[in-house]
Every structure is written in C-alpha cells, then in structure tokens.
Amino acid sequence: SIACSGACLTVVDKGADWFAVDISKETLDHTTLGAWSVGSRINLERSLRIGDELGGHMVSGHVDGVATVLSLIDEGDSRRLTIRVPGRISRFIASKGSVALDGISLTVNEVEADVFGVNIIPHTWEETTLADVGPGSRLNVEIDMLARYVARLTEQVEATRDGDA
Image (cartoon, rainbow, N blue to C red):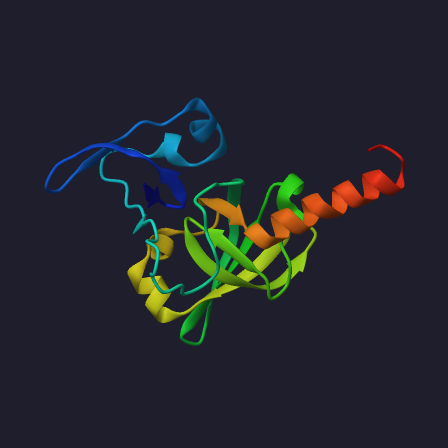
C-alpha cells in the first residue's frame, strides 16, 4: 500500500520509477483523485512497518471527504490555512486535535462550525504539496481515528439509553 495525497491505494504493478494502482468508484467519489492529470504533484507516503517510529497521529489513508481551502495567510515564517469540511464530518474536528489534509498530519488551531484553521511550518510547506494550494483548492481530509471511534461508541451508548438497541 502507498498513500497518494492521503488516499491509501494498493500497488498492483511497479517499475523502477513508477507504480500502478486500481481505484474504485468509492475512492473517486470521495477524494480528489478523479481531478488528477499527468504531471499533478501529490504527496506519497509508504505504509508503516512494525517497529517504525510514529511521528504525528495515526493516519490510515481512509479519506473521509474533500475539504476546501478558504484562505491562506502568511503569519511570520508559517502560513495559516482556513479550511471548510463537509458538514457530516465537521463534528469530528476539534481544537488542538489532529486532522490529515492530503495525508499530512496537522494540528487544528481553532474550529467554528464546519471551518477550522491550521498553521503550516516552513518544513511542511517546503516538503509537501501544500505550497501548491490557495483559496478554492480541494484537499483530501481524514479525521482523527480516535475521534471516529469515540463518536461511534457515544452513538451506541446514546442509542442504548434511548432503548433503540
């Protein structure tokens, strides 16, 4: 497996300087992959192996939706991105929590409804495709895995209390 701008894909063939993947309709419907063309810059990250050091939060490559960049502002050496996510996943974004944008693990600064902000440090700006984005850009977004499971457990507890289980 290899994460391509945050979407975990299975390599089905490879050469010295290329690889091929199969992409399902589900992936095309819920990511930015369908908008890519020859020459598109993407972030690539290999899967972790047992024993690898973790840096950042756990990112699975299971994209939850597509976010839109609202603004990009220089703040000293860093850049602040303001992002809008689809309403159905906005409840999973928390201030000082984690989110992955195009597979890049980031810390959320603030959240208001379906809009949140992140700061991008110079190293991340230079080593990823974030330097290519601006207002209107679309990014694959993956919510924090822990938030996903906490929400699911909370829903089940509430359903049990309401007598739905």
